[in-house]
Image 1 (cartoon, rainbow, N blue to C red):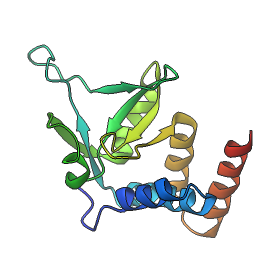
Image 2 (image 1 turned 180 degrees about the vertical axis):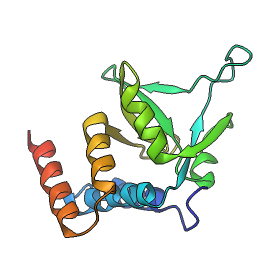
Image 3 (image 1 turned 135 degrees about the vertical axis):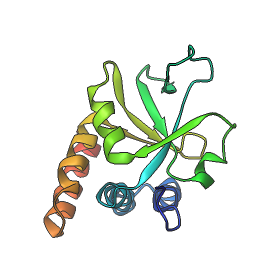
Length: 152
């Protein structure tokens, strides 16, 4: 099911868009981790022009030429964009599928929002691994990883 509370990813995304600090980045990634741990679902856009009997997922190509899968973290986030067909799947399953797709760099959350947020495959792997463990070690590791990514 979709996350029952207020959309934690969209809320964290708005804070990060307003202030791209390390603390807000950690909060945003923590929101994703919470959804993973709780088995929450996301809305995944599908292509309207798929051949009958087939399901094609929409992708988005960035200015740098990288191709990403997309997902909406809530119905409210979905409603910010143009209407399209969607399917609902657990985020953990979608992350695992993305990692198996050739040519896909990661995921863009809430692509219709004023500040979409992307997560590259290497961070998806970290989030999946860390979603199984909770506690302070997770946050320290995540913060260190992001500081490394920001400055390398």
